[in-house]
Image (cartoon, rainbow, N blue to C red; front, side, top):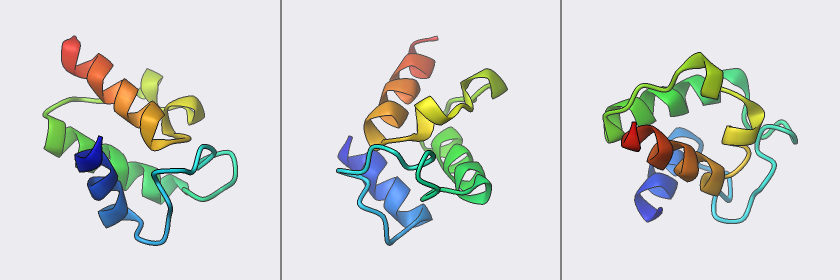
Length: 75
């Protein structure tokens, strides 16, 4: 989880990824940020995030992103 938070902080420095739980719902992340996060996750974790997973629920917090990454790594 720490690695993921570091990666997210590189994409968007001024966000408290450890505590924020509504990154998309509150407009903290925009579509460009999400594309950067998807690209970084794909590279870092050797996964491919399908369009069906690109929903606000999966991007609202570091925990939800982590859960999605773990789920995709299992597949």
